[in-house]
Amino acid sequence: MLPRLLEKIARAQALVVGDAMLDRYWYGEVERISPEAPVPVVAVNRSDERPGGAANVARNVRALGARCALLSITGDDRDADILQRLLSEEGIESGLYRDKLLNTTVKLRVISRHQQLLRIDFESPVSKDARVRLLDDYLKRLSGYDVVIVSDYGKGGLGYVQEIIHAARRAGKPAVVDPKGRDYSGYRGATLITPNRKEFELVAGAFRDNAELERKAAAMAQELELDGVLVTRSEEGMSLIERSGRALHMPARAREVYDVTGAGDTVIAAIGCAYAVGGATEDALHLANVAAGIVVGKLGAATATPEEILHEPATEGV
Image 1 (cartoon, rainbow, N blue to C red):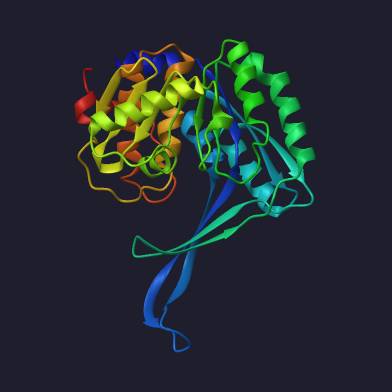
Image 2: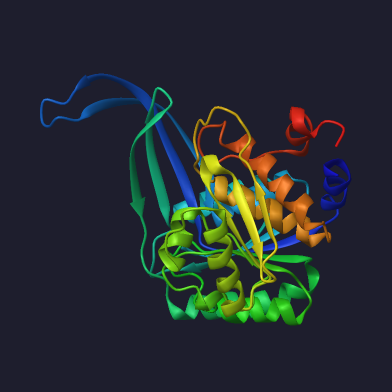
């Protein structure tokens, strides 16, 4: 029942913790190949900046109507200023812990004729002191929120992820995690983790069919004391396997894929918002699937609004 679920989400409050970054886009035309090397020359005529990483998760939460706060570590620089301003403009409360020893993570994408030609990443390691300050503030804020969404982009800003998850569960809050890396033990005890297929297979091994996926995901949930594992599978849709072994497989929505950037952010934001208001698992998955289908039809890290979701043909009258 998506209309009713979205009405409830408008009263929810989500706390997003993770690796925020600034997404920068340079747009231009390619008219020739460089005489210096066999590469295209892009004549940049427009630029754009958007919150990325965990900040894009927060954008998606806010777009769905929930109130949202973001806790993350950045540099103490102009890019952090830009990120904070962009978050404020979207009504997102930001707790950015500025570390003078690092640069704010920036992903620069060069785009021509709706195609990404190049991505350049700027990043540096996070200090222990900044991680401790973030954890302290998180523990102070936790009671005021309905759900904790952990967005791990592997940038080092989540050195205390176990403490974050355990504190949420002790407080009776769902904790959903978008994981990274080869070792998921740091996410033990989470309500749900949401790896994509490649990320899941990196940890659990390849699967050939749904039955094999269900066995591997249920074993992972048992071992890590998770309520469930949601595997996003691109054109194959998404699969949610609970610790009990119950599985829900949802096919991808048929539409032209324009850009998959940030689709995982949309999924975890939708799941987190649904869990924040006690939504049924099936409804949470449906909301995430519809929202993800909308954002892959847009260029760059994007969001899906309740109006867009309810205007999708398959959701009218649901």
